[in-house]
Length: 310
Image (cartoon, rainbow, N blue to C red; front, top):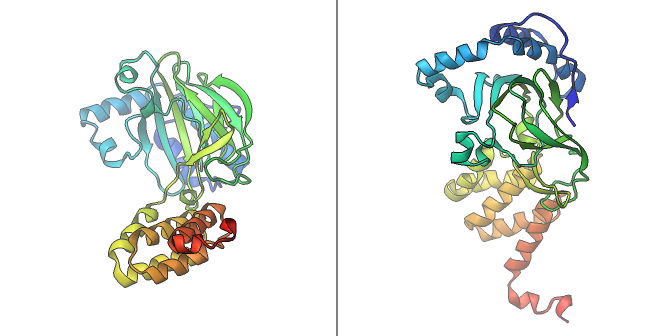
């Protein structure tokens, strides 16, 4: 389960004080102890019982214009400091099952009941209310094969909640949780670690009953552009897509480029050459679909003479 951290002492601090401290500390989000050491600073912000309400009142007076301009997380999140390449500071709202917003919209917008891990580390502090409940699991995300249906080797740890004043570190690709509504409206404070590699580190949804990976949840902005390049980019676009299939270091992008090429159907010869390259890819998630597509492209005449039919 997430690492529980001693919140320490110290007087309450303002949000600006926390941001100034984070800007001055050379922490490493991939070093667990380095990132955990920031926890007591978040706890000191959490002892400030007025800052969040003051910010909320100011935002309401501005018709939420600042949140609308900078907050890409949705209405559950109050963005306190936007992404700067090193960290994000935010407050998360957790309504109870009986609250009107849940009755109106259901639990989906609040990610309740969704088994998932994270592709970044983050610190969390119970700021208001009894705290959300979670079923906690652990797994080795670096060793997982990653394709849908593959074994995740999940280990159930416990069911607990984010009590008021509790400080925890969610470890990337290790802690898996299924969040459930709190007994009454609650708020948590977060420091999220950021690194340029995070969009290329997979995050997963899990099938708890089967103990498997259900699907990947991560996309990088460049992935959406590859299909556009393949369909509308002409020779330059196809040349770029071919380069990505052959040389991109991340299998997710290689697979995206392969699917973009096959969907574009602009150059059958180039497509078949790339499928042959992809059929020998190290990643099973690319290799198996490529081989299936090659068989499909071969047509029924060749399949009739395959060893399996003789």
